[in-house]
Image (cartoon, rainbow, N blue to C red):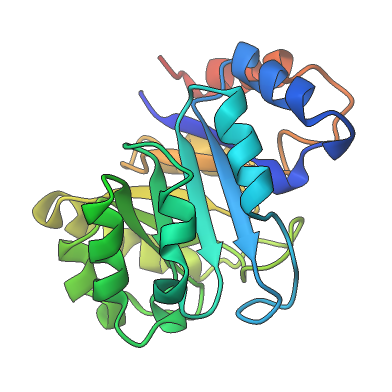
Length: 222
């Protein structure tokens, strides 16, 4: 079984961000998840451009930038010019009048295009965008805060996405309340990656390499 683990950096210890990035990288993390929040699309402020650029400078691992902002089309270039080809940018379709235009800007900049689907967003409403994007970030909680509880009905939506992913050419990533049992259940079914936050990775007073090794061993990751 082969899947990716990405660190939700809004949960990191910002007293020493460089050490956090180094320890996660040495521990075997596959990528770094950057949550950008504007206080409007979601009721919280989180990471900003400087945080993102700092992490990009500290690692050669890919960055997955999750834009939880209104009208990302107006500012997406601020992110693409600070990222590297091959990094991912997710947008929320509800946050934009014409999300396909924003996705095309991401593609033109050499980035990997993705959409994030909220728990209350149906697969049917984003069907045509599934033909454009390479990644779908399935939100298992409402966006905006770490440490929320999993919403069980999201599993039905995941079943639909798993049926469509090969035909439409996208990969599925899980974000929110990602516990070990979710990885054990859904990685074999075809979920490509999992965003690790406070449920599994951060705030445990244990070395990251121990936790990541444990996750991979318990799930049979290669």
